[in-house]
Image (cartoon, rainbow, N blue to C red; front, side):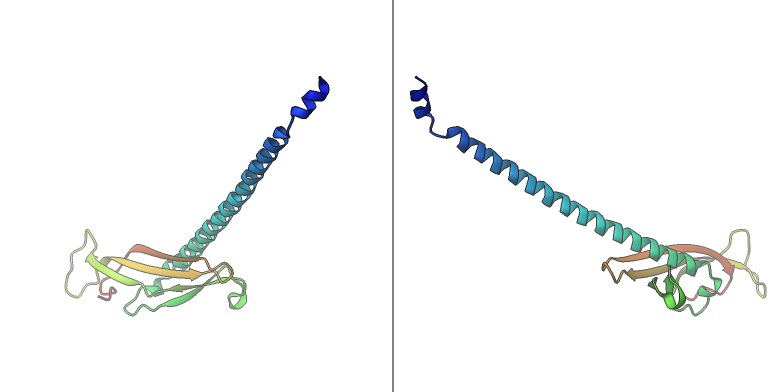
Length: 154
């Protein structure tokens, strides 16, 4: 009776277990590929956010200087996080601040011969590229400044 039971087995369990092993291997390979893609996406997003922070820091440096807001504003290159000669840092291209409008400050009246303040609205653009990763960022920032009348080139 034992001998006849052995003859009836044709290796079906072996075949099913091999198919299951192949399916589980495919799931494992797909999981590894998916985690690798997610890691690349996260790295790219992190690089882009870091470049946005560098561009924002360059804009803050320009905004903190009153000389950037005059009748002839000029474009500049700002070094962020760098040492001597911007070694190890980022060169950020900052466009010339553009004055959008100026209006006499509230509470003042414009009188001939007097210096009255204007409320001005400026726009500043900064662009930076990370030479290592190729991540790029461009930031546009608006700033309102109260300054003497006549300092907004239009």
